[in-house]
Amino acid sequence: MPLHKIIHITETTTAYFWHITEDVTSLFRAVSLKDTSLFRLEGMKSEEHQRGFLAVRMLLQHLGYTDYDLTYDEAGKPHLSDEKNISISHSHEFSCICISDELMGIDLEKLKEKTLKIAPRFMNIKHLANLSKEQQLQKATVVWGIKEAIFKIKNEKGISFPNHIFEDEFDLSDATCAAELKFNKQIEKFNIHFYSVEDYIFVCAIPN
Image (cartoon, rainbow, N blue to C red; front, side):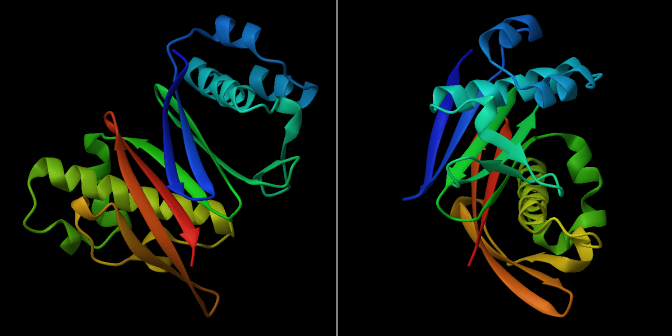
């Protein structure tokens, strides 16, 4: 059930993880939702998405916020009423929020074979050379998370994972790396932090 893990990424950036063991009804009864959130929740066909959505609100309540403190802009990016930066991700049995004084983006992904199968579509597979199958899966998932996290920060139409977002060489043991977004004749650099959380990979990207 409740708060599962806290990761202090930098002095001003912290991620919080909720292990979702509750059913939709239990979560719904535990949170207070504004009308727009109720409307979104009712429109979700998947119970997994409903539970993930509600678990995010549980995390907010744990930190002293409520659903009323969370808004979304026209691009779908979340914002907090106290103007701290927030990024949100959920995958299967976990929801995660990251709160920071800095701009950042996060992604949480469950380790699954499909990610490795489609790796040639989104990354340079030379990064997977000389690794065991398990290490290849972990690294491909980190790379996918890097691209998702950077995309959440920029959120611009036309950004392509394989054509515009590039990660430097890294080892899984490093837990950090660098990445670049090359788009619209500009190059933007990011510091990347990545972690294993149970059988998931968590990635946080922070503009450099």
